[in-house]
Amino acid sequence: MDTVSSRTREAPLVMLLLTLVPSIAVAVRVADALWLAAGAVLVMTGSSVARAILDGARPAGTPETGTPAADGPGEEDRTARWLRALVISSLLTAAFEAGLLAVAPAASAALGIYAPLLAVNLLVAGKGGPDPSGASPLRATLSSLRNGAWFAGGLVAIALAREVLGAGTITLFPVSGFGGTITLSPLLDQPVRALGFAGGGLLCLGYLVAAVRAVLARKGSAAPRAEASR
Amino acid sequence: MSTSRMAWLASLSLLPAAAWGIVLFGLPALIVLVVSIASAAAAEAAATLPRGKVTLGDGSAFFTGLLVALLMPAGVPAYVPAAASAFGILVVKQSFGGLGRNWMNPAMGGVVFALLSWPGLLSQWAAPLGSAAANAAVPPLEALRAALAAPGPRDATPLAVLARAGYGFSGLDSAAVGWVNSHVLAPLGTRLQPGTLDVLIGHVAGGIGSTCAPLLLAGAAFLLTFGVIRWHLPVFYIGTFGLLAFVFGGLGTGQGWLAGGPLFQVLSGSLVLAAFYAAPDPVTSPLMNTGKCILGAALGVLTFFLRFFGSLGDGVAAAIVLGNCISPLLDRWMERRKVQELGQGVA
Image (cartoon, rainbow over all chains, first blue to last red; front, side, top):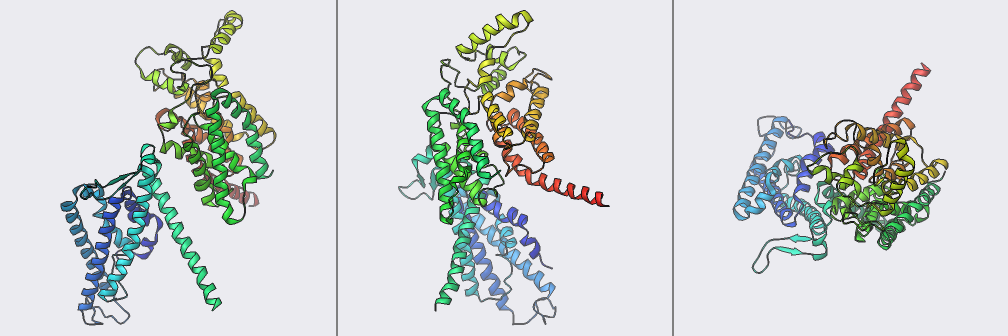
């Protein structure tokens, strides 16, 4: 049994509701986006490493639940993998939430429900689920760090655009002599409030996705040209 | 008729209203007009230049900038109309592929963006020329809301409510209305309310080009004559809104049923401007006449609810943006019905 079928995972509305909306809701202040990004990287990397280690602990080809594994993992094996991924992701999310509450209670309050939703979101997005490739712990770690960096970069870019234009501030973390907030006086007086709304977040996300696609498309069209010129 | 010709004719028909706005509000109105149009043109050029096809000549950017400016208060900081026009062109129009592919009216999208971003600045209106009263910079619609919110006796009409509240109508209005009342209407046993002339000719606070209904209606007649727009959508829009304002408009203010002052409600705010110049946009309104009638009625209902119960200005821009969302659905529905009818005819 597949806990989250690929059809469900690819449904735009499900993806939008479970993965994008919480991210957009949080990406209003840079500090909150950084905390959520840190949580996402922790959960993704931690669960990948844990799963890679657990998968590697079994002798190769041994079916996990007694189901013959002639054509890859059986139905029960997949279910067990999903349940294991769910438990690991949930544990890591709980650890992140508890740590955040202890270290930064204000950020914990700002993230609210979105911090515990992290596990579900990552599973639905396919980033916290079982790794079918059976990669080594090192490769799984690097892969998760790369995914996490993309997620963090996107989230922080959206938050930065929204906070700078929508509030005229950049909220970071207070350190000695620095209050944690940079104010941009012309925008602080009359910010573009529309960007603070959910619609503004989706707008920023849309342009970010378009920019990434444009860069990838340019790279894609540049590669054959380079190949042809050789 | 080409799209370019339609856009330039629509712009031409709006020039009298724009000129009246400059007369009424002076240099600040001219600045808003210039900044808004320049910003729309610059945004259009910036978006189309990299594609190697600059579309400034089609007039659509000029029209968008003009329409945005006419809906703005005179004296609003220049960055507000500039941002609204640029948003309309870059985000609403060019991001979806340019003219003909936008699903929302660019000018209305820009105005709603500005309303959401700077609601305080867009509610600071300028007093019209020759009005020295303290409350002359408050549009009649907002003055009516404030007067009805205060405790006290209720008058039968909006203008009577405003007169009791001491709203500052012009000297020309009191002279003209007094003359008509004493020389024409007194023998007939009736009389005009103070403020009738000011509201009718748009000598009140409001958007730069949205207050003068006669000039806007003359421009609309020009567009109808040249076949740029059809009558269905504006008539159903204004008719439905007027009907709802008449029947229910007085309920929330304690004036009872059938006491909403429909003419005052139609002439106040930007309803006439938007009904003839934004709602019938051929790109964002239904193709068939039945669809136009349905959308017009829907816009009337939306505007009524947004104006009487909402907080986004006079509700017109937000209603049109919401109406643009259902326009493709109406087209699809009408198309399906047409195919079914044809199928039945063949059978």
